[in-house]
Length: 449
Image (cartoon, rainbow, N blue to C red):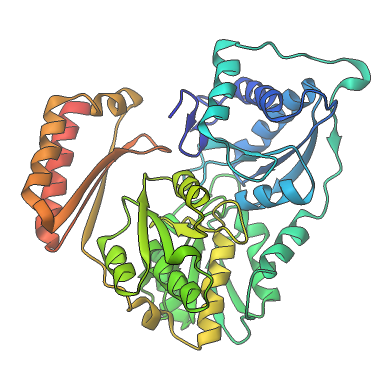
């Protein structure tokens, strides 16, 4: 990825790495790259999650955009996929989301959507980087009546909730669902959405205070939701991340239903209704081997991409597929949305349970999961770069792959959103793959930390 943009926008520690000055420059550059030069006052939407720093960055972005003549609609706290949807509904030229997704509160980020609601391709991100970092193009700063302004905010929650409801085949009447909002963006929308669909809702972690986003809650910390579902005998539970573009589930017994099981259930349902384009599902290299076997057994093709929902989406658009996702909880229903949408995904899954009058545990049992160990090692940006060239690290990874052979997989990669190296080892024997993964991590710790 580039010098500013990772796999999911610009991200860093707010007010240290991601400063107000940088945000203002990004706003200016984005307006210059994404709008028609002949249009005097392009319209840009800005949404944000519940981090304390989001207000600060919203003000900086707004200042940057208005300084080059763009008009700004501040959507307030909304999910990332709401920005992507509302760009089209409100006929805006672009949309910006301020969020660091599943990261802790001290991080924040800037995600940019073009006028068609899709995340930016690499080429446009590189143009923005060149303006911000290299001053490749000097912004034209209008004066007087040509300066941009902040426009009135429409009823964004109502419009977004109505959109998701329109995609749901069956109501959720009679269902009792626990919903973990991660003290993030879903805190503003989830209870309204699921209540209007007919569910009895148990709302968890929906009291954001600026610093508790993703704090031992949400899709990266599933244990509280799992325990709650067991204790309160709910039909199921769903958890979102900070900006609600991810979703993971919990069955009625309190067991985790991760992204691979989630995709298996939805893909089979779409195939049974003749709605799965080309009978194919797009995942990533981190998708469990069991999912590929599941697809093969049920007459579906599995296509793997690099890690990142942007790469899943690119493959879907390129080949004409309409469903894909990641183990981490990003799911793209391309018939309804241009990006991953956690609440839409949860509604699709719950609607399947309601329509089939089935338990989530029974539907998830159709897929068998291969043992998989995922370990993370915190490193600096320099350590991330050295990962590609360090001889001992490369040798350790090669040896691990040779040890497993055809009995499993080894995937080692830098995170595109966090200062981490991720080691995933998959195979038939959990003790063996854990030992292999720990061996690789130890070599990386010695060489790169």
